[in-house]
Image 1 (cartoon, rainbow, N blue to C red):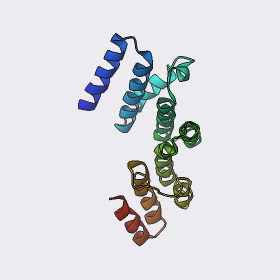
Image 2 (image 1 turned 60 degrees about the vertical axis):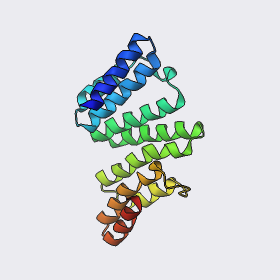
Image 3 (image 1 turned 120 degrees about the horizontal axis):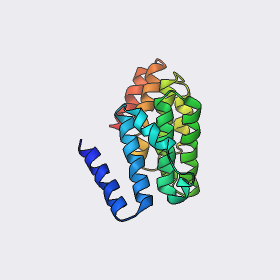
Length: 168
């Protein structure tokens, strides 16, 4: 409930100050929260109703996050191809901006997508896309639970446990 109040307040303030780019980003966050809660249709309605040049209103970080949210919506609806396309757009946007760690935001969702699609062997390939872990940061650690799940479902519970321990 607090999350909804904070996002609603951010949208209200951005509207009051005529700061449309932040209102747009906060609305994406609201859509993401709804998807997380399983309330997919209001999020889909918001995304369908975006103005034609919405991308021009966002900086690179917010745009990359928006693409990830589009991917998350498609993932929630079982639209695998569209989900992966949007996750890749998110990664590309982060990479073009020089924020390589940011690509792991969508990479985590792609690992969960591999679990959903029962493409467990793909987990190692996707984890490999993350590159060498230079730091145990939140972006890297978020990749480990879905990767551990892939290992477990491939029949490697000891490997899964080792990876999961690293995550926690």
